Image 1 (cartoon, one colour):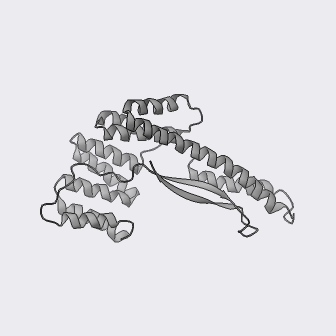
Image 2 (tube, helix red, strand yellow):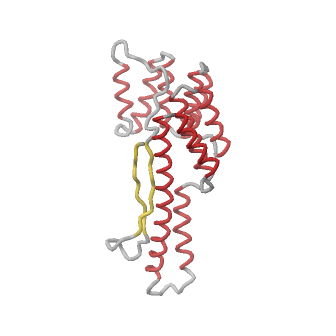
Length: 243
């Protein structure tokens, strides 16, 4: 179950369990808000505990890749609190670490494990594409990137990267421009790259330039406080962290 689904079901369950009472009860919303606050505290604790484990993995891997992989595998083997999505994420992170250390076949094995546990996400497709580029199979890489971009057009960035690798500068610019026209603020980096490519003898990418791999978006539940309306149960807040 993903995070957004969990939040929705949590709110529904809290409201549903209270709806069996008389709707004119003066304590109805107070009780619901108290229950939500308890659930929010538990949920946030679990979310932050998980993020701490990811922090430890990156810290250990940056110092010693083998030690980081050992830590991840020990979690996969022994941590019974992990669901399949968390286990899959650990395989993905290990795969990306292997990729960054040029252990391409080991990286592919991890990405395949994530795919079997969960699904072949756009992130996973882009990760595999990077591996196949390094293995010299650019046509297979392009297939994966096209599939990723069909689901999430953010991944046109990597298609542009591939065109640069293939020295097809015009097509690379078209891919970046596609994103820049979608949102000039969010994709300002695409325009920056376009301007660089328009310079004489630009230095072209030789591999995919993965963006913000270690940036995590943490969604936390937020109980209602005294400043909100009486009918407000609570909400959520988003925190972005870069590992």
